Image (cartoon, rainbow over all chains, first blue to last red; front, side):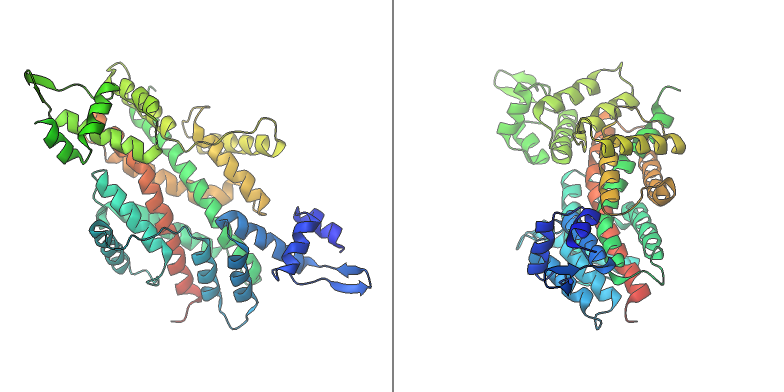
Amino acid sequence: MRISELSERSGLPVQTIKFYIREGLLPKGVNSAATRAEYDETHLERLRLIRALREAGDLPVAAIRRVITALEDPGIGLHDLFGTAAYAIGPRVEEPGDDPAWRAARREVDALLEELGWRVTEEAPARTVLAQAFVALRRLGFTPSPAALRPYAQAAAALAEHETGQLREDTTRAQALRMLAATVVYDQVLVALHRLAQEDASARRFGAS
Amino acid sequence: MRISELSERSGLPVQTIKFYIREGLLPKGVNSAATRAEYDETHLERLRLIRALREAGDLPVAAIRRVITALEDPGIGLHDLFGTAAYAIGPRVEEPGDDPAWRAARREVDALLEELGWRVTEEAPARTVLAQAFVALRRLGFTPSPAALRPYAQAAAALAEHETGQLREDTTRAQALRMLAATVVYDQVLVALHRLAQEDASARRFGAS
């Protein structure tokens, strides 16, 4: 297809597509004539992935390039590819240097993951996000004990299991990455559904019938 | 207790406590002498609630006052009190006027809630948040069908059921509201645990053993 059709099907302006080519995020089209380059479905899927990474994690071009480089390296397996993308997408919070409440919360996070038996690297940014939430809970007078967190961990594990199960034999690496990026939006879905489910639970228990 | 002790136990500066009293968010202390006011546990719990509302929803004073007014009105039942607080806390997004993709997404949200049989008002802000997420999913090439959303709805319902079950006979209305406010932090916990569970699921399926 011509760049004009690629633009129409991807929903991205021709200028943006040319920018991605210059930045090395999208391979050049194949020259079929001196002034004409041809693009195919792999270009379209790549553009969809770039869009998903931008929208999901508000990723700068340099971070997208690191993900694309990992995607194109056949020596990098799917698990490491997911890690590269997931850590780039975030969410991510800065860990304050020497705050005792933070250090205690971080130890609680590490102990919880140990107890759950989850295989997660020490560098996973979500460990820090979780520690931050633990600090906030204690400030509000709640104790993030393993027992109190179990329902949330179970819900998270069930969803992760479901999502991993969506990957099929014929799912390409680019498609798999796009699905990973979409989980950021699914988290918005989850939070909104949580709010709606709370209203329903309250209506059933405390509302007028 | 004196205001200095109230400040210490609540972790809030005396100036802030005096500001809340002037704004009508916190009842005055009982004058035990011309220059001395006494505060009790209800003042402390009220301060904890104000703090939770501020931290959870970044609520302005006017919005906190509306919640406090509902809290102090014995004619307002627990379900309506929760609604007042939950709708004030958000999250909330602006619905664009006449965008066809938005209108379609909003109809999908309404149909989903109908199918789930959840008792949720038409005005619930989470309906709009969910519609926004549906628009984003379609833009990324995913279809938010009821079947695709079922695992997320089930997780949300299980958590809401668990949370409502935490309310005991002797839970005060102020405590119940503070627990509701804390669910905003529990959503951060949930999203972080989701990210960690995804890494674990990927490690078990695709990682080196």
